[in-house]
Image 1 (cartoon, rainbow, N blue to C red):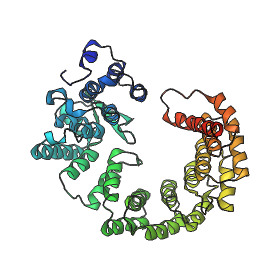
Image 2: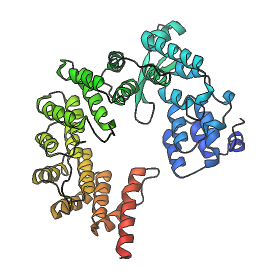
Image 3: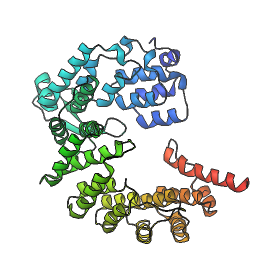
Image 4: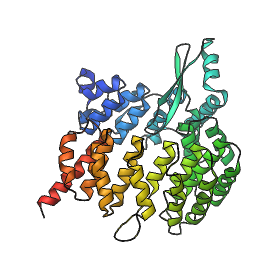
Length: 422
């Protein structure tokens, strides 16, 4: 294959990593990468993943050290083929910083035009044009990148993902094109009920990264829209503008807190309310806490998770307010396991020296959900609470390839080291 180290393994079929890539097994690839298995095959595995249109796997390999620069152009696929696939993850992997310079502006312009044609025509319509098939298209929602999903269409023997809007947004940014707020919003809103769709994510992230007053104003206007999808998009962009503002002035902090505090009291749509509460949780302010607490008993678990995630300690030494403490005690016993785990993690991260909260975490050691138990173990270990040790022994070993479980249990090892070396 001519891609540097690991070639003989790839050719001989001896590499477990190569086999996992060939099988399209993302979870196994992640496990093998985490275990440093077959690390000499990373570059060959990257080229194979690209040729298989496995964009998520290709990105994983890059994250773990694959060097795209070791590949020759004929080891990969043309940029136009990546656009046709409809996979933003695959397209971005091909434009990794090590090989981005291979593509002249003319090729990027062609990719932009092709992505726009797919996006504006629609995947199903374009597939019908190309295949002539009148069959019913099969649609499947699939994970594309690490955090984003897309819809995969299969018709007439062809399979294409509908991430062309995200590809278009990405290549426009590479070309230095400033797409208007309205056009980016329209691309996002074409993905109905899919906040995690790659096209939605790419649009909101690009607008949030602008960190400017004009974008802030345009997003603020959406708060009063009768369309919940528009309110949701506006809330996400506003949250990201503040989140990405790393300037010393932090000019958007005050306006964001004012806006989201009022918004939380009036919003009725669950998805929008959840986004607003997540935004409030990014502020260390008694006002943010006061706006979060009324939603502790909300009937939708997504809202309660946002409350649990957003409650913070204040003062030194760290302590939760009385109301936040009461809320967290209730949330640690919530009917929803993710809410319970989130509350345990928040208590752990708060590092408050509170016996009642420690006892609540100890009670969670007998939870029916393993991740809740592990979060409780982690929180007790951070507090140097001996009760974590026996619980960790019962729960070990971590599930293979689970970074989350390893992180929880490693904290117990660190506690034992501190205890034994004092």
